Length: 540
Ligand code: PEP
Ligand code: MG
Image (tube, rainbow, N blue to C red):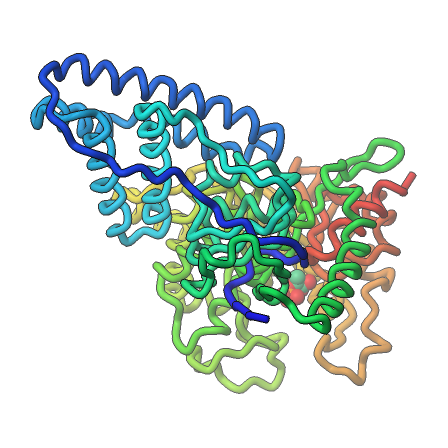
């Protein structure tokens, strides 16, 4: 038995043969052409059929894997209309008097090298796309057409790396999982694997040899492992793991793609809470409508020093891109109280839960706050990011936040850095004060989310961290529920929406109550999404 370890992109266990992805890698030859005009026409005809093929793939992907994943083929079509790309090809044909194949291959290499050298990870990712579209034209020019890889029986597809068009053209009935030597966890292929709900492992390196083609193997997407020629013991263990996983998935699977709607037709959004980019896989797997709470402080907690703007930008952008247009609500740092970070040098406090924390730090150390806002605004150009502010008690705080936000926008504008001008901003309802002034607060922002963990602690004056008080800490307390109802009423009176992102949002005993209150969104941990959907659908 050979065990290979890589990076898991999506969980699941599958057993079957390995099929190594084979391409008809053609050697591109260079030859001289006399009639360059005719050669340009030949290229243009090939380009037109490539666009047509991509349109076909787009339509197929729309049906199979949804609009978000189909987008890539629209992007590929746009790439084929890119003036720089086209000019380069035509220029090479005309000036060097060479064949279209050579001009396309050279341009592809040059553009891919240029993209790879860029600092921006998104642009680096486009290197694979430019190669992909160019390969398509080369196939057409050589008469190979649209060659799709196929296997006779379901198999674990192994490859050096897979470009999106290769992944989507695979007959999904025949794919047990993906295993690649290279690749990035935020590539479109990884996103597709997650959407297709099949185990996928990347970064297995060159240990994943072509000689394993046809070998019997187990892919364990949970642990990022592949067992080639597994022994009996491993096989038995893996079969058990697979059965358990299937049983769990199956039950809730039936609810994927279904609406969050009650029997009487009331709808509610169900979003996910995350603390890390690696949680996005399970957000997608569980069919969340968006991310309702991204606790950004994890970035600060994991670091030895302040995370830079660039570091933060990459994280926020990755999440926004992976969520492909769905709402991603990122909460600004909520440091202090239970979340201590040494390099913040926070003072020892008698009463930290009532102390110097969250927005209070941001409004007094504006340099830290501005760095985060810049990163968030920059990332807003790559998806539907919204920003949410924790621990608000007063209207003046929100007005001050908006002033700072305005300063950051002005700086970005002056630097010519894009951001979404329409980005929504919201407030967490975590203090009784915020509830009492919620009507006024609702005039200032677009949305609200109730942090029931803190709202309970502050309403009941009970430290949520103190285990001795567990019996007293009761989020079902009528005072807490009255707070939520009051906030919902005043926020709705101003035409704004309100969600719940504290743990109480996933309490299935409360779902009906929240629906009655008119709560617009419940943001819960990814693993609870389908259970909450089930509860909503059973509610009258
Ligand atoms: C809350 O207070 O309910 C909340 C969602 O924030 P956190 O648990 O991170 O304090
Ligand atoms: Mg909180």
